[in-house]
Length: 129
Image (cartoon, rainbow, N blue to C red; front, side, top):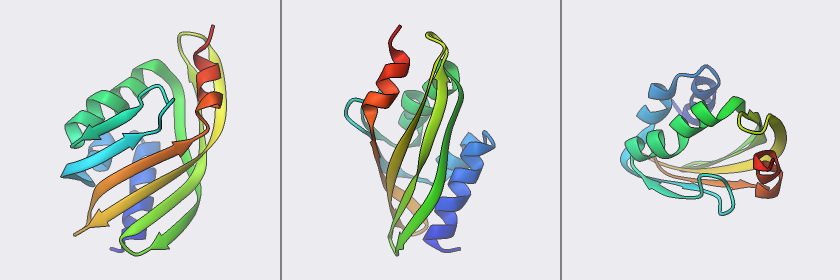
């Protein structure tokens, strides 16, 4: 399977709520970076840190959170996904839509780095009462 196909499979698994498949694509020494200004900003090291620092929070703090790619850029060991986030923040009941860019670095069939780029102001507005 190509790196591009693997990344596409990860987004499909995320859309289906199959978090074990998403985490299984991450190398044990991977770095996952959420954009500065995003509610979960920072770099998480390894799949378990991503599970607890990002995915569990997305699943409990948001209703219908989605990351839907609409374009991919295949550069071999680097794959870029461009798409849209959406969801409703449970505490405020406010929803948002924001464009994202995700940069995946892949080595030996596993993601060794993920970097998120997003307009965090659009996300932050949903958090405000």
